[in-house]
Structures are given as structure tokens and as C-alpha cells.
Amino acid sequence: MPITKGSSALVAEAMAQVKTYTVPQVLARLHDPKVQIVDIRDVRELKDGTVTGSIHAPRCMLEFWVDPDSKYFKPMWGDENKEFILFCGAGWRSALATKTLQDMGMTNVAHIDGGYAEWIKSGGPTETLEEQKAKRKK
Image (cartoon, rainbow, N blue to C red; front, side):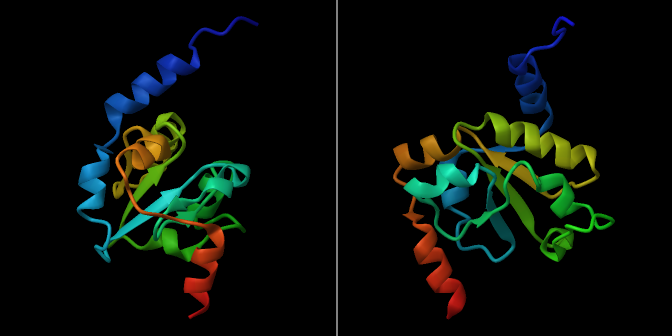
């Protein structure tokens, strides 16, 4: 069966329909308690670190963690007072994921243009998974 719409077209459609922040815009809100940055990359991509203060929600489980009717639901996603800002490696998967969450009814979701690559390029703060785990134990 031939593909009638490629991944580039899907990403372009998502980008046109979702809220997108630049790295400087997110850096300005990094310590805002109403913002939760979400790393949707595969766990194997986290070996080089992640955005400081982010949480990991792998793309493959995102819809299930967000859906209150799913046995995998994570209550954090039900907090309507937070804005969830997603990122991936380059901003493509996060655009698709943000669009999917909007399709599920979420209005408090956005993503970072350029993803983790742009975050690093812009000098955004990062931490290792071990550093994140140590903070959560305090």
C-alpha cells in the first residue's frame, strides 16, 4: 500500500496547529511552578542528559499516561493549572505528540521548537538522570 501522506507532511500539519515555544521563551519560564517540561524521547536518548527539571514521559506511552480511563494514567496529567511543554530531539516528535494531546482534548500543551538539540545549542541547563533521581529523593 503506498503512503499517501509522509512524515514531513504530518509534522508540518502538526506545527501549524500547536503552540510552539522557542528555547529563550521556555528558559524565561523554567522555574515557573505552572510549567512542566516533558522529555518524550526514548529512554536510550537520555544518556546525554535532559532539560533541568523536566520529567520523562516516553512518546510510546504518552497517550496512555494522559488518559484517565487508561490503567497507565498518571494523575499529574490531569492538572489543568499546569502547562505541559514537550520536547524531543529535534522538535518533530514533540510537535506530533502535542497535536495528539490536543486531539485528546488537552489545551494546556505546547512544545519546544528545535527540541533538545536547540536547547543544548542555546546553552539551556541540563542534568543527568542520576541528578534528577537524587533531587526527587530529597
